[in-house]
Image 1 (cartoon, one colour):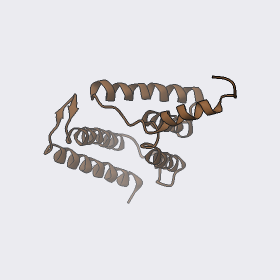
Image 2 (image 1 turned 90 degrees about the vertical axis):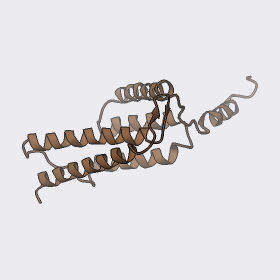
Image 3 (image 1 turned 180 degrees about the vertical axis):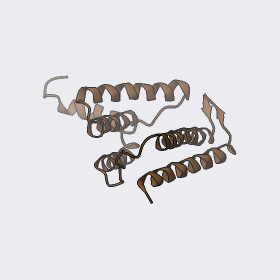
Image 4 (image 1 turned 120 degrees about the vertical axis):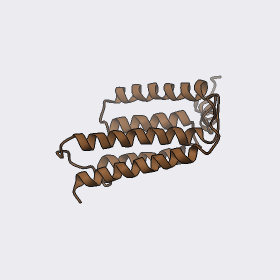
Length: 164
């Protein structure tokens, strides 16, 4: 099977998964924007996946077969998978915004190969957007874990003796 046919097949499979998510999420309660129900996020993710799959299909059909395919063993794919494993491990233990911001900065540095200050700026702006969406649009807080309480307990122990 040529590479182009395989990529089109993957895009069609992603579209099928998106349709499945959308159809199953439609059976659940959506709630409302202030208090989303159990069907809200699966439906939103299904719609986002459908849009991405349709964009991939469009690009595959319209573009010439000149691009080199990216395989699962590609360096950038492995970097993102390793970073996602780190996010999965650290998400509940540490502050969600620090973990997600660190993930974004890591991906911007090592996959997009941007400068450190752009990665830091992108991570800060991205986390401000995440905070705004979760805090104001959805009315929920992401987990903070034990990071800030551990940091506040650790910092006084680092100060020189005699200072208060």
